[in-house]
Image (cartoon, rainbow, N blue to C red; front, side, top):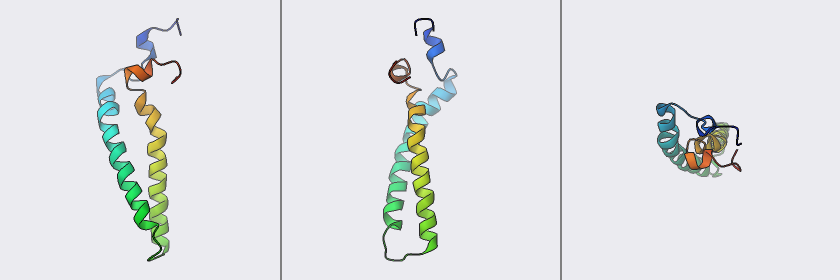
Length: 88
């Protein structure tokens, strides 16, 4: 790690990408986590079981999985985490 400069360690270099990953995505993550969790909770009830509810629950679960997979990518936008050797 000593041979790389601090600017080379950054994952995002342009200000627009940094803004999106530091401010927009955390809000999208929080709202998506809340909305998809509520969606799964409602659709998992056995009051009206049908194929449409199962398909919507699968889409909601996949959306949650995608948001969780994108979380490390979002964390790389913050300098304290981007320079951390353990994170890399």
